[in-house]
Image (cartoon, rainbow, N blue to C red):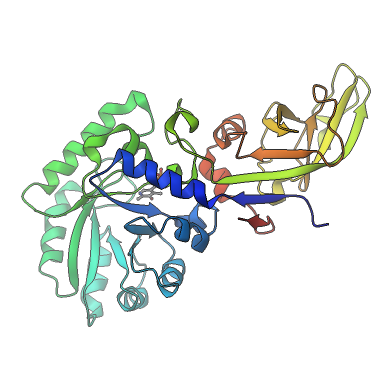
Length: 357
Ligand SMILES: *Cc1c(COP(=O)(O)O)cnc(C)c1O
């Protein structure tokens, strides 16, 4: 028998979550964000389930090429653009679209003398202060691209810093305002919204929405569960109890003995640890499902195993099924307990984790 740990990828959940995006943004084209190996779900598998999207966005050139070679004719957008001139030739050859976010990229484009034209997404920094031209540089950048022989369609783009926080509406509106004022006068398609903005700010939907996390069934909105948003978990990480220990009062569990029950306690050992992608910093109390019932992680997570409290699940024993996150155990709750976000848990699945569909 193989080690009982696996990540089940639910393709129908991906499809369903895409339909939720369409429901919220019926007039926009959908660029499904599948960076980081589709947030850990597997690039080609996720692309197949999301084939009804109008485009795919990622930032790894090799992944974009693989997608094109797999036969997808969608718009495929590179979210960080290109890093050197050699990549530009690939982008042109594979008919990829690219973000352009700085002057160095425009200079490379000019120096490269490509035989064909590229579709570009010109990125404006409206307040995230990560990628994008400043408001002052923006018109010069649009002008440079509009007259550029190697540029085809230009789409204007920006990214929100705080769309997930309900208290931060003003931050979103001020970014929208800056974007609109910088883009005024150009009749060019636009793209602003990530998942949070798809759900919370219909006025930002424009021509292309760029959802990521909601496609995978985690909630992009702080304080709202995925279930409340009708999103279904696309990844379920499950395992089994492989050993049971009965602790006497005061005996410690695992490395460092960071957990010592005051009363006798039945504890299960689960196959799955930080070398599989379960967060080592998940503290005692992090929720977990055993035999379909909620309990908690106890003690320190080890490289290959973790401990769970079975004091309330007396019928559990070796072989009992465990869900670390996914169906029945929202990834957002596990992430919150571990002081991180669902994005990180999904992306951090280790290569040795077996993925099945
Ligand atoms: C990752 C990313 C997205 C998707 O964000 P989610 O919060 O996962 O919806 C959209 N746009 C850009 C530029 C990104 O980098």
